[in-house]
Image 1 (cartoon, rainbow, N blue to C red):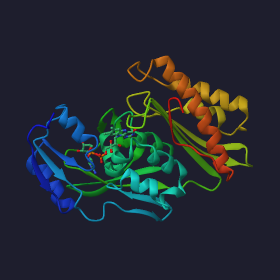
Image 2 (image 1 turned 45 degrees about the vertical axis):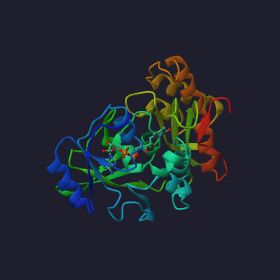
Image 3 (image 1 turned 90 degrees about the horizontal axis):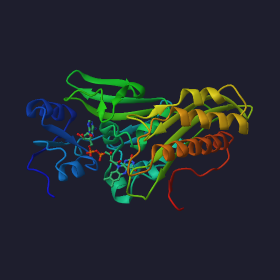
Image 4 (image 1 turned 90 degrees about the vertical axis):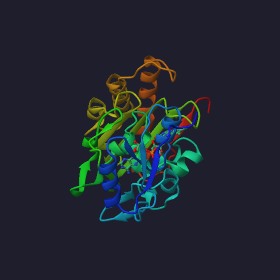
Length: 300
Ligand SMILES: Cc1cc2nc3c(=O)[nH]c(=O)nc-3n(C[C@H](O)[C@H](O)[C@H](O)COP(=O)(O)OP(=O)(O)OC[C@H]3O[C@@H](n4cnc5c(N)ncnc54)[C@H](O)[C@@H]3O)c2cc1C
């Protein structure tokens, strides 16, 4: 089906985009990669009267390592991040970018659009919560920053006002001795994961977990920080017993719904398995070992 009719506006600057959002009113929407918005428009699940294209605003696609942070312009495409040697400084970021959907979606979809969409199954919302992440926004009052923990309020809902735009995403470089992993379990490439899990941890003496974050994706209205799972390993050795306790606590923290991707029980079992694997991979990476992580498909 074709999308309902809409007017198209190409913004040349952030100021112009904000002015267009204000002038065109509540039925106007920003378009970035279009990989969430266009399918919804074609299914007539959303009918914006106007689209404001931010793709021609200069300076929104950069990926930089600056002042102890990785800085992504809102228009950095998943594929740009996947291919970026700068972004690979934080392996969990590379894990996340590399398996989102298929190559077509990755070539168009943007990190800023993903966070603004706040899809509970989106990979960035899970991976970036495992790190110290800040979202840079621009609105009528100028530029301001929001800690990522406070940015997504609910499924498909962020703190952004109608006339505000995400301009960048800043991720603090993890301290020395840290490692992370993002794992997503999917039925096939061009679909969202059934369950995902991100773990970022810091080791002391190669086996004591000094600090850790455990985040669960696709099993709640927003990504879930599994604090009981973190407590099961924080300040302790990464023994099999402690990792098992963390994976069981993560299973209990999940709030999955049964749907076409699987039953709630199946998803809980996946949570436990992915968290266990993610902790093990994160720990190996923290020790400087090479370990693969990313998106896994049923039957592979
Ligand atoms: C077949 C398919 C499979 C997919 N699978 C996955 C997957 O496995 N994992 C995953 O994470 N994602 C997946 N996606 C989604 C994809 O990652 C999208 O790129 C992403 O959700 C939205 O980014 P976008 O740039 O395309 O945003 P758009 O579609 O352009 O916009 C999405 C929403 O965000 C708003 N918006 C966009 N940019 C900004 C901005 N800078 N400031 C404020 N508001 C903004 C728009 O107004 C709109 O409401 C999939 C998409 C498709 C089509």
